[in-house]
Amino acid sequence: MIPSSGVGLHEFEVVSNEEVATSTWRLVLRAPALAGSIRPGQFMNLEVPGDPSHPLRIPLSFASADAVAGTVDLVYAVVGEGTERLSHMAPGQRSTAVGPSGHGWRLPESVPVRVLLVAGGVGAPPIVAAAGMLAGAGVPFDAVLGAQTASRLWGEERLSSLGAGTVLVTTDDGSRGIKGFTTDAMSRLLGERDYGLVMSCGPQPMMAGVARLARSAGIACQVSTERMMGCGFGACNSCNVTMAAGGYRSCCSDGPVFDAEELAW
Ligand SMILES: Cc1cc2nc3c(=O)[nH]c(=O)nc-3n(C[C@H](O)[C@H](O)[C@H](O)COP(=O)(O)OP(=O)(O)OC[C@H]3O[C@@H](n4cnc5c(N)ncnc54)[C@H](O)[C@@H]3O)c2cc1C
Ligand code: FES
Image (tube, rainbow, N blue to C red):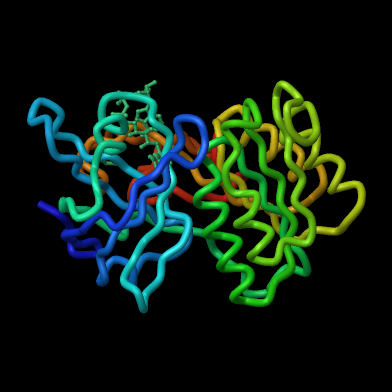
């Protein structure tokens, strides 16, 4: 059973589904009620047809939603059986999505002077959604975007077109931008400008480094977490996130976005 806290079951139709970087696909789907209600940092759970032996839905964040066109724009990496099948969904094909799920990014009541966004790999979609939220609220922002290698980068143009002041790109192998990690570029920007908030999504070790840097600079930090998910709406206890104060909370219904200070890294 799906709970009634705004989460619903939506039929969707694939508008387009194309590879935009190595093993990285952009999926545009039409689901008007979902497009009109999903907020930056929330996610949805997609049913991918074609293999009854894999009944679990795939949790995916989104990069943008267009309430007028009724479309949602997602970007995903093909990492296993489900995302491989998803990459074969063709325009016109239909399935269902459960959402909008979880709690997304929060703008503090005293709006920060400037925000720093830090994304690694396929952490980029919810960071692009955060950029859209900041642009809509008139809050200036810079971004750091990291990937293993240039061919896996996605999101730089989107961040620039949303009005990022500076976008620093890093790659582990130096094939594009700064050779190194997102935290190297983040340190550089922290030395140049004052930020009131950091928002980050990427691999757990990267976000731990981002949270450490933000803490030592005395800047509030929100992170978007990822866990393996069974149900996606708070019923199965499979997506626990360990809290600094002890105990656990659910990534799917309490998160995926948490204040970095709340988490046990
Ligand atoms: C809230 C949330 C938002 C997400 N947003 C995005 C997104 O915008 N773009 C994107 O590319 N991916 C995103 N993911 C990760 C995505 O859900 C997984 O990559 C996907 O479920 C893998 O399914 P699969 O059947 O292809 O892989 P599987 O065969 O199930 O697994 C392949 C590999 O991926 C790992 N994996 C599987 N599920 C997850 C998961 N939920 N989180 C982390 N690692 C996982 C497995 O440990 C394994 O190493 C998100 C996950 C969560 C929880
Ligand atoms: S996935 Fe079931 S409780 Fe979070």
